Length: 372
Image (cartoon, rainbow, N blue to C red):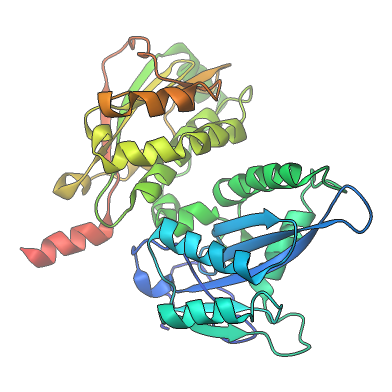
């Protein structure tokens, strides 16, 4: 496997043989072929009661691509999780690494990986640090400030892990990948983020942003190089970063709202509805309409990765989801379950829209050039 080109993030080298990957968009397929999987114990409500957290991590991005919490460790559940992760992400890894736990070395899991043509590797007998990425991740989990001393129930453990992994994937700045978020590296936006100019956060700029109503039209590239889940991750980061400008609002709350709407968002993107019907973020003076665009029209500006200015003084925000006829019931079910989501028509903006252009897609640009 070749080394990353100069200028990309540094990547640690595992102390043992190759590790594995289960969800990787082909932004640069050579970097997304290895995953690592492991199981850790979570303390239950009583002494002697433990729950098992199964976690699958993409080594290159540190993105958690699959996880579950169960009452016990079992080969059957480990095999099911691998199948579910591959089916969800539509990518089969080239390499999979694990320790020598009974579930990881079981015949069921081994046969599945053989059938898929995946190269397996395991830690050396008696060596505790041969699965470093998983062990490092578990330390991050268990050193979290709100990590419970004991979980009240299996449902409590699953609920806490879901919240933490949403934070970890989309908000946590990881030192091993240049202090990007795992989602940014995983979905191929990290280099674009690095190229953005420093944000102006002077008091005069913030005061001006409170005075002037801002309407923006943002377009996100939804080419074959970025799946529906990858496109939704870019939109989620844009919404969360815009909301985070306000000290009165929580970025985590925006991330949770977008995570709650991820399933319907992916359906809207896959069906092409977001090309005609925007998602609208209303936060203070900001009225941001986000649509998707594909083909050569997606090959222009990079400015869409910047948060929309003007939300610094906001004390509330709402994410308005489009509700096209084929998906009205599904959208209604999602927005009814979250206070920050709405399927109502957003209020009319006060100023004329100013489009800052779609995200650039370097790989699609190279393909368009070579195909001419």
